[in-house]
Image (cartoon, rainbow, N blue to C red; front, side):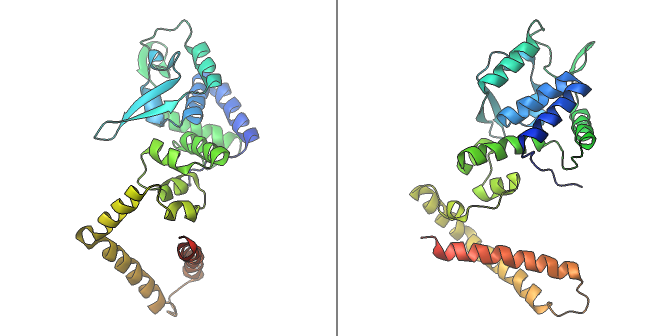
Amino acid sequence: MNWVAPIKDDATLALFGQTLKEIDYKYYIMFELGVGTGLQLQDILSFKNKDVTNKKEIVVKIGTKNIENIFVVPEELQKIINDFTKGKNPNDYLILGHNTTNKPVSREQAYRVLRAAGHKIGLNSIGAQTMRKTFAWKYYKETGDIYYLQNLFNHASPSITYRFIGEKPNMEVVLKKMTPQENERSRYLLYLNGSGKKRLNHIIDALTDIRDNFDSPTNNDAFYGRVDCLLEELDSLMKNYKETK
């Protein structure tokens, strides 16, 4: 399975959008909505015309607790959407599967179209999360605000969000919690059922196992490649941990 990556340059992004237009304009609308807001593919496919027409913000409930997340619709995107839905039945799905039935495109079909468009222009790292990752990557590069994205996507930590967009974590951001309340919460969670020491012991055991088997004749070059990458990451993490006050 290929790693799904954001589209990081404007020229490729424009070419990808043009390719979707040539397949079917509705897929271009789907893609622009995802890249412009950070909405998930399944949410976009569930929208009816009335859910997005003349909307500056789109509210989506996520998770079992129905947490409300607000996705901002940029002004230029509002115009694109309004032009697309003009004169259409407000109760029809935005991304119709067939004009004769009021059913949306399936997630599988949308995925196939995104992949096909990617292959057509030489992109193999395209998937259902490409739109969201592209939005997140562009937003982070423009603002540096990883916490906004973390909250928007309901990620448990900034580290997850950094990994999601394929960026190396800013460890000063990751290691410094936003507020004293978050630091207090971390202390509580680390002591809860001995969680902190259990996690540390798990890491120590894994590293000890690597060290003890380091000279095994069964190890291939890929093993040492993985170990080298792991140690580089650990070196960086430890350096930042020691220097962060």
